[in-house]
Length: 258
Image (tube, rainbow, N blue to C red):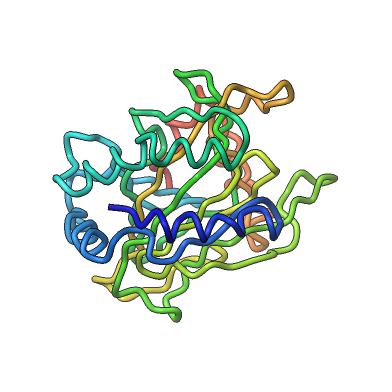
């Protein structure tokens, strides 16, 4: 399902550019597989989605294996197979583990109003107690065009303010393009700007995360830590949403608040 020769060539650029280790992999899945994966994703209005709808994120997700049709099910199984994990373990130089529950992963979709503020991902898995270290996001929208935006932004880290600094790179969500990146290096990422699409065009993706034994200095964060956009920095309501969203005990209270 995955073009491993292409993958092996592409990951040679991993860690060659900042602001944190990453690489882009074009044509990640075989062409017929990518087409099938896009077609299998539910419609935006489907009841199968969980909706994150607040001032810092506007997206829908689904990570239940029971909801995945055949090709999607097989794709996530392949992404968790030794063919992939052995490669990634070799890339990082340490054993990596998969989360069969796909916590935070699975299908993701953004439509009109789609947004994802700059953020750090959760650090310690809430049940496995392992440290999240690598993300792979594969974009699955053949109708999406550059003018629609929704680029993946990678920000430098402002250590003094503990906020994102300069926007260092933007990666367009082109069809069947994957981005592999390290999540432990003050890895601020998100949409560089909100999505601007007409109704019926969506930013679709598959996401999967890989774990390792926690490093001695691993952050104990159990939820994503978001940052306000420039226009939100003095908005007390947004700052309170960020505070509640970053806490395991209160995050559920703000997932769907607007």
